[in-house]
Picture 1 (cartoon, one colour):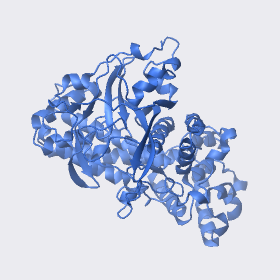
Picture 2 (cartoon, rainbow, N blue to C red):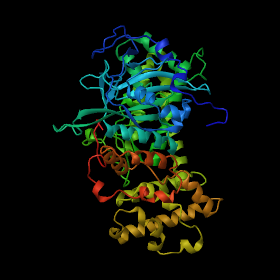
Picture 3 (tube, rainbow, N blue to C red):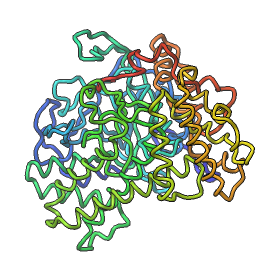
Picture 4 (cartoon, rainbow, N blue to C red):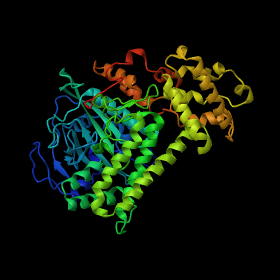
Length: 538
């Protein structure tokens, strides 16, 4: 918080609900499931709940909104962010969009369990949209109830904040609130539903506009609405673009492509797997959005996906995320083609994505390896060979890169035996005693190549370690850690949620008092629900 910033109560927030002020509304005001045509949103009120109880909030996000600690601890805060009360200036609504799901056009989707509360302008002039997830049905809920369970809400709340502190572009989370009600869920869609505690997360972002907002307009051949929405988005979210320029839509799409590439590079850097990269889950601002069946790579496996719905095809696997982002951008290009009516500028923007991702990935790998820069003639093979070795044996990606920083580059270290070279890295293997002599020899050869390359670094070993530790986190929201917090919370004990929230604010720091949270996945979590595989209801 700056020394000049004033923090307020909820009723002092400044709302400027530009989205609903400047875009067309659904004329139907009843909250019934239906196709909504010619409108960007439908007005809808959150469903009241019986016993709201706030169990966690992010002080940093509260400060973004100019909210004081006292405001966040108040009964009014719990009532508002459970959906029981709208304060002055709030106008609640759900937006209309479509999308491709697992590669197939799904038609109208929309905010099925998200209800927007409006947009705040803070003291710095920043626009922040507030959105409740799990606050009841909307016209876009289809056959669902619009609610969320504590299990999925903890995962969304913690991961939103963890990703931000890792340096990954993301939506944020203000609060996690119990509703006091039970929600029926069939976690794996296998005919075994059970009741779970209900909860609501308040998500915060400059905008929640998705690729699918534009796709639905074009699919319905409503080009007038497409243009109206695109012009609004450029004015509001890309104000630096000159709206009078003849190529403004091309410039806009190029920026979306580059922002998306930057986001994906960060996902690959920290081992994050989104799990459900449908076009309706892609942010126009290149933000990570919709934390559903996500997961973190424990052992390095580019074919892994946490989503049970994707268990057969692995469409959204870790190693395929860059290609899926390109495919999704292509669908967006098709959607906005009527605004440009030329293929070449759209193709140029897609090519810009490829170049931005390649350049970003190379810079990211150089940083993870502690190299001063990326030299393709040597580092292409160096990187590719390492990733192949990590895949051959169960190797914890997070721990491996963290420990790699401890290798020395002096001649004495270079002349060590293979086993001695590997010593700082043994802790990253799930079964180090099972490493074959051939593997140890291959990894020893790679480490010698790496040390020779690292010696090009103008910095000494201590400086290289500091630089590597700044991009290779010690702490991530490991799948089993989230599940442990969920298990305790479902028994009424919420301390671990807040403990993880605090831990993950400094993921690159050693935090020796929390060393246990940096441990590899335990054996009990290998196949347990919530730790290895999840469903979209998660």
